[in-house]
Amino acid sequence: MNNNSELERIMTDSTTTSNLLEAITLFRMAVGDGLNDEEFSRLFLEDATPSEDGFTLVWLCDGWATFRVPPQNMLRWYPEIGWITPAKEAIAKSIAQDCGLSLFEPPDEKFPFSPAHSEGHHHLEMSRESETVVIAHPRYLKIHLFDSETHSPLPLPKDLLERLAALYLEQFAALYRTDYQ
Image (cartoon, rainbow, N blue to C red; front, side):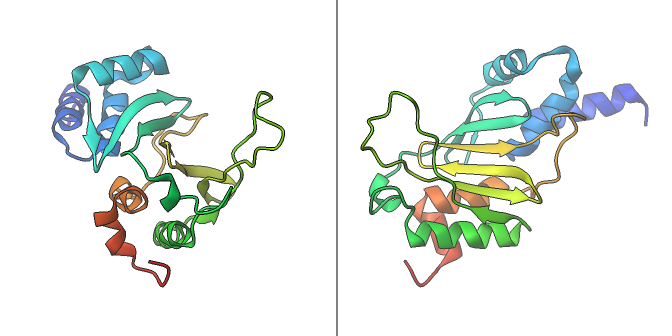
């Protein structure tokens, strides 16, 4: 297969696939390195406002795709100050294990303008070895799609967004039933 027909296939696939992570990856491969992340994000978002399972791409930066998530009831994430609910932790742990990732629950960074008495919340991170791959927060989702040095796509499950939807959409949470639900 020659390079022109391969490029044509990638361009077609990036606009016809229903898998959002695959569409971003294929589109990035199709446009090459002639666009910086801001230009790529604007061009990709102008083609359409792509979404999948309630996630909408907001931006691509330094190999990370940031997504808007469906509206969340914060009490389903944080029943007490700071800590994530056991049900969300159990879902995230199951997803991480299925994907061969480790799960962590680091605190959100506090900013200098945060009130001194305020308790920081935590978010969920899924990592492979020492590299964070997913950051799940009730207000956003970030997925590391491209290696920052080689710019090549990272090996991720094709259904990663569908799996992560269980954290954000009740109808998907049933896929990861736990004792906490």
